[in-house]
Image (cartoon, rainbow, N blue to C red):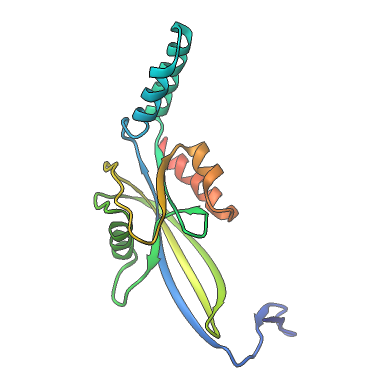
Length: 188
């Protein structure tokens, strides 16, 4: 599909009969500092614990978990977890795309964007005899909303701590780096 250009030594698309299309999408690395996101899970574990030391351990874990920012990951039908994202519509700014897509996919509308965080990933794939070149731009935002109302596009979602999000996120190493960078923003 790609050949090395003799003059520039860069990989360039091989001339084929394929139609090439350029697409742009935008997404968000979204986090929340709300203490009650994971409190219900920890409370359930606390109720089943026996003995004072187990309860004390769970209370310490609860305090630590409640103070950590949680990152939203959506569970895609293909099996992976990734950030909310979607196609840009004609005339939309990047931020307008993020707001619209996030609301369509999760019902979340309350966003505070962080300046200086804009990451890009580019890739290509083949679909119906066409080569699609795609650029996806990700932004960092915080929300106070905790309830996620999933669209038909996803099979689940979750608010995850930094460590959990790095473990669950799509295998693309850049996504893991973005979570690390986003976590740095959340603790400043």
